[in-house]
Image (cartoon, rainbow, N blue to C red; front, side, top):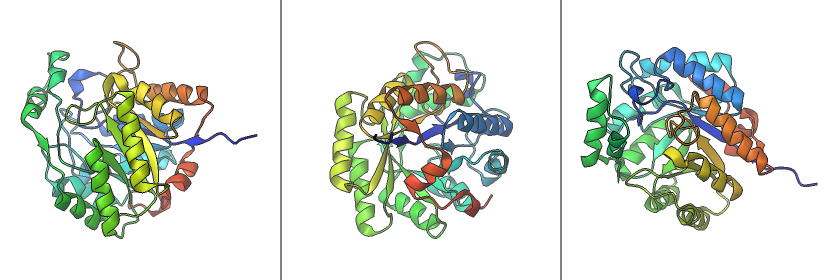
Length: 310
């Protein structure tokens, strides 16, 4: 009898895309972020991807001090793999963005693999009332925004974290980002197995059509062969459809309130754990099994939770 394939679920807990006014369930305070991460792990997430926020108004905060308020709490309460963002928010400098990962030396850090238009402004058609003035400005500004991730920026993050034993979730929003990653592989600045997170549905990146998903997979297969582990992320209402498609094609999946606020048409997800439970049902319905944190560490060749600096 064939052994069911293990699928790594990543849960992106809070992020910087959505604002507190968009959902009352978005974690903002350190306590909320820690509880959300642990809840997602208990629901079946092997990896939690983390941003930090100012608890006063929910503004993205990339200071190491902000992360220090919840990282040790999560580690104490769960064996989940912790993934710290180096994306932060598009208005931050690369030096600001890398500081938490450089300070805390996590098992995984995310890394955006190219500059892109990053259009969040269409959300203004759905969300019209905001508690904090920065929220509206944050969305409006993305109509004239390039999220800067140059070759020099990417090399800076890789070199800053070199020697920490941190591996990367390479976030690829378009086909060119896969070629950028191949470039850094050729230069010897990254090493297999590459954890490639293909992102679908952000305005400015690749779309959500099944052909888009297949094209990204075909391109990654051609560039990296068996030297990578594939995962998919669908933004907004496409989250679960993309997850089902990617899992059926042999991939891992990412869900969470960073990427989508929804748990069905017109229904806000009440927690990150709710999305994890939903995608787990999809995976198990496909005859797949959910990887534990220990299995995820083996699949992704991680250093282990005892070798981080928090």
